[in-house]
Length: 144
Image (cartoon, rainbow, N blue to C red; front, side, top):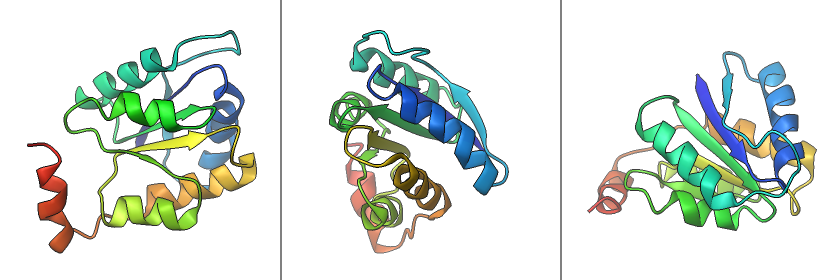
């Protein structure tokens, strides 16, 4: 499974942590790191846009975006048709975003979630399938 991942400067450390820790507990993950590559100040919309464009070009199966709160990245990514970026802060929000909303981009706040818990959130998010059924019609309306 190919995971596109990007962050701004505030999310850089958590991005590096996820790239290191997730493959150790989830088999078959390949990360494509879209930046940023250090903690120098950058603009989060540049990275949410980059990830969205790469995802829409079918370069990855899912995406993960990280900034200080996660909110800016979610706002930026959700401007693109067919992107369903979900800001998740715990296991239930992670599961529901996949089961009911078929989220394809996970957004995390590095200043709000302990790194170890962020790994668990991402692990659950990546392993939770979309239920389809009654939820499919609702998800389809997002792209009208």
